[in-house]
Length: 98
Image: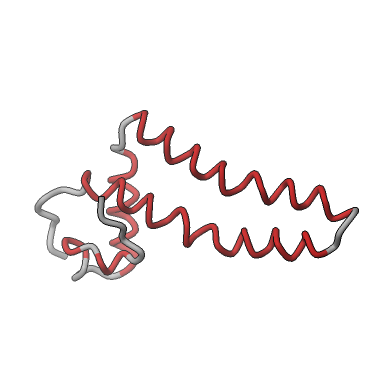
């Protein structure tokens, strides 16, 4: 599976503006199968749960708040490429020209 870190790296969406690329990817994500959606949601939980654990530790160590912020900043870098890679196969082969 190829990872797409940006929507511009998807060949079939390259000529469209960002809003249209995101709309096409949202439509493709809606077509994902139940196991694919479940896998994606589990991966999101794996990333988000440590944030809450770190927030609970703020009472003992204030630097855990910084780590929680760092994990939240890295969330899009970890989840978006996987989401784009899983939904790109559901993009239509021929997209309308606008």
